Amino acid sequence: MYRDIAHAVYKRGEASMGNYELPGWTWAIVLLDIIVFLPLFVMVNYSLQHVFPTLAIVEDPSPPAYEPVSLNEDTQSLAEENGPLVDEAARGGSQARLITSSLRSTYRTLTAISGWRSMFRGLACYIALSFSTLFVYSILVSAWVPALIAAPLSAITLVQLYTGWTHIVISAPSSKTFWQRLPPFKKAFQATALPVVMYFFAAELASFVPKLLAGAMSMNLPNPKTPGVVPETDKNDIWKAVLVLLLSLSLHIFLVIPTQVILTRVQASLLPEDDDTIVPFDRSFQGKVEPAIVGGKGFVTVKDAWQSFSRASWVRLVKLYVKIFAAGLVLGLVWVAVVVPEMILVLSHSKKVE
Image 1 (cartoon, rainbow, N blue to C red):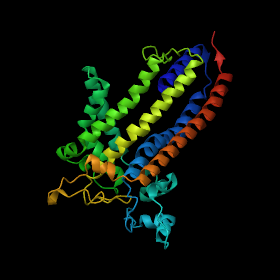
Image 2 (spheres, rainbow, N blue to C red; image 1 turned 120 degrees about the horizontal axis):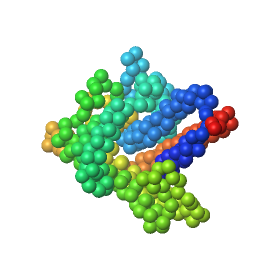
Image 3 (cartoon, helix red, strand yellow; image 1 turned 90 degrees about the vertical axis):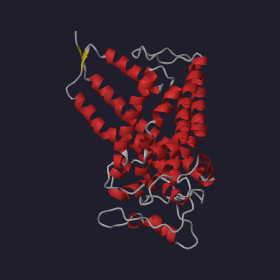
Image 4 (cartoon, rainbow, N blue to C red; image 1 turned 60 degrees about the horizontal axis):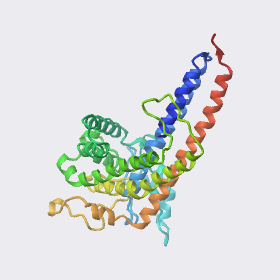
């Protein structure tokens, strides 16, 4: 909805500038903005919103004495890079602070592995699964399959990619390409098909229901068929927008995030034994997972994935999402604070073309 509004505003601004000649240095400002803000937006929308929560979901809140593995080619360990965190764990009578307890400690842990590139770990796999999902989804939607059904179905066909992405994010760097790290389709399907359906159906529901409520209240929304037209609003749209926003947040907190926790933990349970993790990780899920070699399933069930996620972990995850939301909000405000004066400057130096 917000993207539609922004697009409509952009189209209107573009139309209003049709009879004006912009100064030659306008594109230099645009290029500078892209260079400065694009990496920041990618970091917030990918690293903070996807990588950080995944690590928080799989981190064991009560690990045994944990010695981070050496992940650098110069054999320098994570323990050396994260001295304050390790020192805190070594003090007698004090409890070690979890890696994902703050954005700063998570950032330090990631950058200690291979510098700033670790903030974008799994990005190639993520791009591949995004385009693949969009491709399958578009085929299903074009065949008149409802979005609520098309989204889970498209994700089920790509369970290997989704599981492989989780493995890449939580594990130490590997010389293998991401497609070489994908689990067998049969095993990934058996373990994650149900949680995949739960998560993607919840995500679609969290998008569909607020739109349904907005339509039921006759809220003025942008029309996708006329992207250049900004809808007229009235004072009642303010409280309607608040209700829609509260409903959307509630669905994400009580529906989307819980199903994401289940899916991520089930995916993590399929991590190969010889892959080390970059955060403490209980592979047995409190003794609920039996290896396939001794007759067990070799992965955690939906029920056990849910029950093994402690209350303290829930609190830590919710706090993390609040911090991520605040970081995104601050970045958005900074972007507006920079772009608006730039637009005023460009408009003040523009010439009207007769």
